[in-house]
Image (cartoon, rainbow over all chains, first blue to last red; front, side):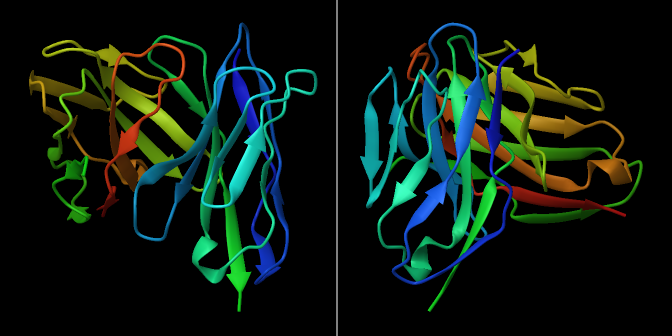
Length: 111
Length: 114
């Protein structure tokens, strides 16, 4: 079946450090891939998405490239800020109604 | 600004009580979803609805039911609350886009059953 695997957290970084959160997936067909972010005390919000192989999604300095050959969609940011502290969810959608979410990775950024 | 609003941020209920969680969206979306979020498990789909009065079971429907009498409102019902239903509940809505579907989420309801 379809599934998403994310690196376990928490990830703790100092401000201005480089961020990578790994995400790999298993899916039949050609899924769309997403990163959602959940700030403390809030619901999830869409951060970025990519709908086909080699697409790069980007938003707020974050980016992720849809790699079909490695079935990956790793999230990166060149210089994190304290305000980026949140839980990040990788997700996939293959059509129909269901979106499959990863377990989430908590990021702490220290000043 | 698009919005999905859940009626309560925090709820404390007793074991055996009937619990209603309400969700309203103002985007005229056809699809609405209820998830529960637990540490280490991510989001798990409880129920979803693709139209008024239509509902489908998700991955973990046991102990829950739903109601969608109006397009904008989707209610989650715990018929007889139990302690293992203590969790964060998230409502979401989306358009029926097929591929490339992205959802809008409410702020969540943290339910504690004692």
